[in-house]
Length: 262
Image (cartoon, rainbow, N blue to C red):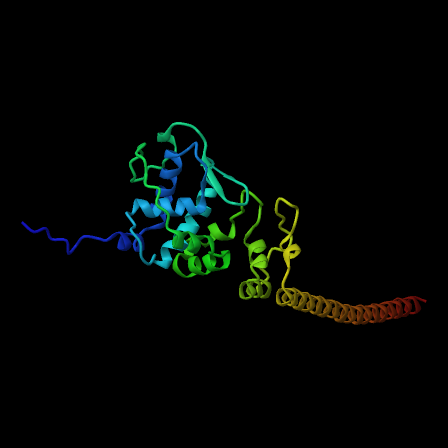
């Protein structure tokens, strides 16, 4: 008796259709099962692929970006500990039932997972830049953009503004500068602002150009204030003239009345 497999979803199709929430749950499940074993980002990536029975082949690019966003999201989970710049994750030791959210569809067990390594996948996921992830989320999941904008790396305290400068993401830096949305003052754990990480002449020119534009704007405002002050002074002078005329007329009327009485 033959089995109809026409509607069966392949592992790679399942990976391509994976949701952000599913990926987050699979990451948390693996961390919980291995709570005493630190996990690098690349290891988590491979373990999530294992949960989809991945056997090799091209990984859908959207999955990589969703995974990168999921990792940033779990950084904010109070039960997850991120250590050193290598992005090694562990979970706090307490009851498993308290660590998973109610939507988690994975069964937590102590079954040993395969240790296969997908070198190509590891290379791909570790090379994703913040600017690339921002572009993907902005286009595909705009409702999640706040999680990128507000993300602070728990290890070094870097923000999206630090990352954009470090990565020399010219287009995004320019867009933020033009729209006055770039945060110049925010500091990381080394007490450095994004500007402290400028290492590219083109990026430096962008900030210099923005500074010149702001100085020109300030000068224009000062000129307007001076012009307004000049107008105000003229109005005050006119008011003084009117006031003096009124006084003269009032005195004239009083003198006339005095003379009529006499």
